[in-house]
Image (cartoon, rainbow over all chains, first blue to last red; front, side):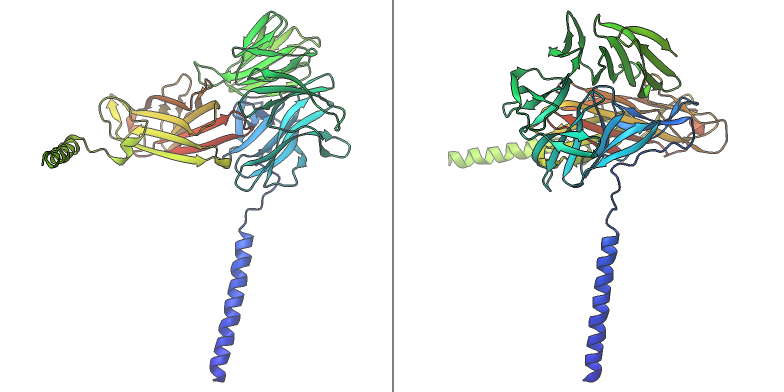
Amino acid sequence: MKRVRRWETRTSVSLAVFGALLIMTACGSQPAYQNSVVIPRPSNNHENVIEDPVDQRFVLYDEENKAAVSWTNVPNEFVYNFATPSDVYTVGNSLTNHFSIVRLVNGKVQTLDVLPDQAHEAVFPLATNGRMMFFLLVHYRDDGTEVWRHIVRWDDHSKALSPFEYVDGAIEQGALVGTDLYYTVIRPDRSVWLYRVDGTRLDARPTLVSTRWADGPLLSCEGDLLTVKGHRLMFGSHSLPVRAVNLVTPNGILVQFDEDENSLTTRADVYELRDGRRIGGAINVEGFQWVQNGIQLDCKGHIETVFWSETGGIGEIHG
Amino acid sequence: MKLEWMVRMFVVAGLGLVAVCPVVAADDNSSLQPLGTYVPHTNTSQTLTLPGGEGTLTANVWRSFYASQTGNALTWEWQVSAVYAGSRSVEWIRTQWYSQADLRNGASISMGISGDSASASYSSSWQTVRTPTKYWTNNNGAKESDYRGNLVIGPAVDYRQGSIVTVNTASVKLAGDPKTYTISAGV
């Protein structure tokens, strides 16, 4: 009898230990999510991390060999950019979230902020003028359905995101005109409403500007919003087709990235909005980086840098 | 009586229809099957269920099973597509592809697109050579993007039999959803 009890006790203890080990092993095998996506790191002075805005990924580019070395190539991990010159991006996974805000400094990625609720929140660039930065913060349920969207402002002193008190809805895009933040909201009937809110006050109430704003990118230039008509960007008497990626500098330079239909690679075109003139561009673009009054297009086999004057207008083009 | 006769005729007609219908292999249901003559092929699909019940994104890839040899060149037909199934409007949908094979002695591989040729070095040892990635995007509201071409490797003697791989990555951006989604499939 005693033997039987001892055997029972031993079995129970063994089972308990085995169970505990199993639980510990299971816990240990949980993916240890770090700071969002896996970002390539330069291994020498010739390598820089740049952004590929079409594939929405960071690229490690070798400026000496003029070739891409590696990419952020984990499925569903993407990089999101502002539509105006900025070295700040958000990165995250479309299925698991784990978003963070990062800055490209001298070809290396530095983390500015990691969202506290890694599993349920995602953050996307909305608008910036270099001094103020606004993001779209989205909260999801466990099943991936959305709960809410807010516009948040980055405070560089406290290194924190603060929401606008009275801004909500299916916010989609944003653009800054002075300190006014314009943003679009998609309505249930798929119409696009345009709002304006004072970007300096988180307690400001938004003003409805239009209930029939056109689909397309929301961009601003020289104190005004660009309108979109028939899939074309209108500026004064000039118009240019909307492309896959459309970026505008404060002094009226439009940089567009899209597919080159002949080479089936990424092409970049740089225009002066004032007169619609094309001032530069390239095909086989692996990524780009903003430089002082210009843009450096890092391509397969060559680098093209397009400069413009501080007030806009054509500058030099270097191959 | 008349009704019973009519029912019998329907049954006979139905069986007759089944009898004359060709037997369709399971993988022939692929939307990538080129029109015309049946080509023995290898194909696969991978589907991603998008979060929040927004639908599915499928990457399809198809390649003819046998290479046709003309002189020293081996040629395969290939086709790739990205398909979104769901009720949301599509901002853009993209199919993106490359192929790779084990080659040697300067042999080259191309998927038939301008500038996509890649070559092995002049060494007798096998090297895995990959074509540059190319892509095709539809941003006209279509829920599918596809592309097809011929894959050529030569000379045939410097290709390691059975080493050819074709990979397709499908990506989609849905209107109103700030995220981009992707899924890959390879044969």
